[in-house]
Structure formats: C-alpha cells, structure tokens
Image (tube, rainbow, N blue to C red; front, side, top):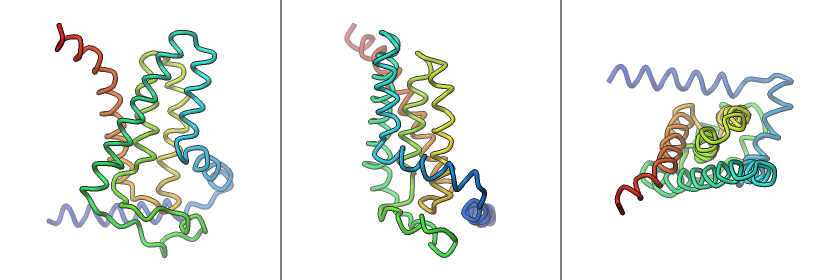
Length: 182
C-alpha cells in the first residue's frame, strides 16, 4: 500500500513539474507536435513519404506502420480506455491554456502515444533510418501529452507499451499466419 501511495505521489510531482515547464523550446515545439499528431496526421504523412520515395521497402514499412498504428488505436482507445476509467489530471496543475483543449475520455492510456510508438516501432525493422527519425516526434508526442494536461506519465508509459506490443503483433502476424495455415 505504501509503495502505491509513494508511486502516486511521485507521479503527481512529475506531472506538475512537466506541466509547469515553461521554456522557449517547449512553447515553440510542443504545440506544432500536438497539431501534427492530432488525428494521426503526422504518421499518415510519414507513410505517404515512405511510399512515394522508398520503393518496395518504403511501401512495406509504411504498411507495417499504418497497421501497427491501427492496432494500437483499437487496443488503447477501443479496449483499454473502455476498461479503465481514469480522470485527466486536474486543470489547476496546468498554468497554460492548452489544458482547456483536452479530451473528455479516460486518461488511461495515451492513445496518441500508443499510435506514435506503434507506427515508429513497426517501421524501424524495415527502414531503420526512418524509425530513428520518427522516434524523435514519437517521444515529443509523449512529452506533449503530459505537458498539456491530457495525461499522467503512467498513461504515456502504458500507451508506449501498447504501441510496442501492437508493432510486435503486426510484425509477427504474417509468420504466425503462414505457420498456422501450413
């Protein structure tokens, strides 16, 4: 019990600290990241670029990324958010206006983070350079979700875990299907 209370208190402190982070870097970079990640626009754009300029490997990576992202969204938003009801962090913790634009759904897990990590992790085995490049905006999406008051850090960690599991499932599905049918 004491461990959980300590963990909860640590998460509260971390959330408040991230919420009060007021640097030129955060003010300049995080809002555009949020806009690009909204409705998965950033990941669809990355898939289009990989398909257009990456040949068959680019198309394969894009397809894996999209599939991973879709699986992650179903698991995070369609399953986990329905099973676990968690309120968003209190608005009073956030000194900026972005806190007013957060969703009404459950805070747990972060669907944005799940989609970002799934897309990136599914792309990386086929196009390592693209996976490395996409890891930066994926990490920024996770930071932005806490900074703007939409999530607690544990929501983002759970979203990332769902994203990694979704990418692994998408990457393993063809082999499992062949093995099952063969």
